[in-house]
Amino acid sequence: QLQLVESGGGLVQPGGSLRLSCAYSGFTLNNYAIGWFRQAPGKEREGVSCISSSSSGTSTSYADSVKGRFTISRDNAKNTVYLQMNSLKPEDTAVYYCAGAWRPFGRCDLNLNYAYWGQGTQVTVSS
View 1: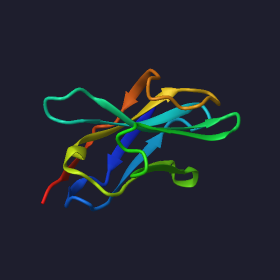
View 2: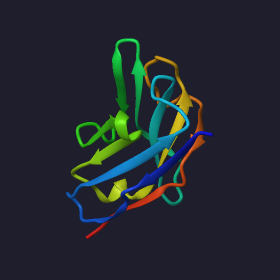
View 3: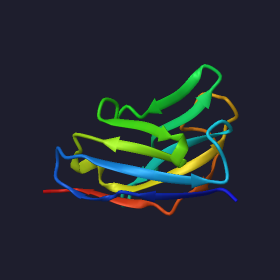
View 4: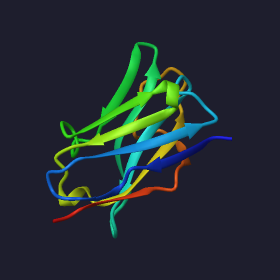
């Protein structure tokens, strides 16, 4: 059974950093893409970043709003995907979710059918 569990959220001041973790089980990144999404109160869910194993190597993608500030990475030995978030802004405040989508050896895409979701972790950026 595919499972994803997020951790690492918390309260941070503007300009600070956090690293979110997504521990997954029941699948490998050879066949699935993992994406990070976020949802702020009163707003629609937004795709943040994704990672997968494509035929040409690791594939990553970022939303324009986080490019240059967020970095997605993975540790295959630990079955964990990370989202390093730097230069955080108050508008980054949201519940962050990781999700899995079937994508065998293909480039990741935030518009894939992400069928498997974690429970979410709260990130609050405030002084």
